Length: 286
Image (tube, rainbow, N blue to C red):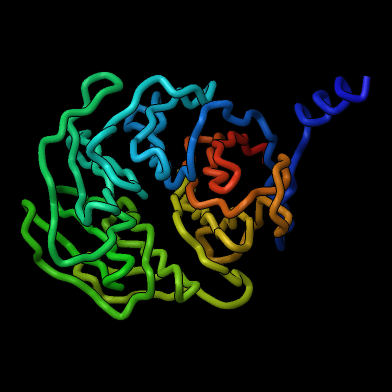
């Protein structure tokens, strides 16, 4: 009877995001059963039908059904080493930050498989983030070289230093660049030519080792704040509009353990609950 009550309680569990001006609410939907090992960032396919997980400890990209969280394919086994990030370019190719091999690998996708078609190297050390500018420019963050490097046709064209262990790189529809400057506990917003436009740090965000981030359709930014054990959501007015997670490590719908990745599609949110070795799925209720 107690077990049955627990299952029912989990099914209807809601997580409110305490925030000024109202709270977002998330409904917990599902936790994966697959054997992930320190999953890092997530990327949805351009059509939203597949979820690609940088399955760091398994040295692969896991191709996941986003509804059931079942692994239905893998990419890069036997050739990737501790991948951290995955992203898509304008041609629908998958770019992987192949961290342990100090390179970015580009895959042409065939169903749930991938064919390696290009490699980008040089100018960065221990890449942990990759993103594309509208068109052919590719940005790579070097977590050990403390920089962000821009490439066109595989050739370095510009860079910015002075970062500290940068992880994720994201671009918006206008091509502006968001860098998660992890060890500086801040988000940097850059122009396409890598000039700093804005810095987001300190209160009320109080980042503690932020790792990966994503924009939703309304322009909000979801940040996986690793050591805070939270996902923090920032509105397009630069206010903190809430948090998912209590701030204490755990394994429960309202507790995460050093999350590193997040993906959003419509009202659905996927989280890499990294040190619980699983993927979680939530739905925005408000």
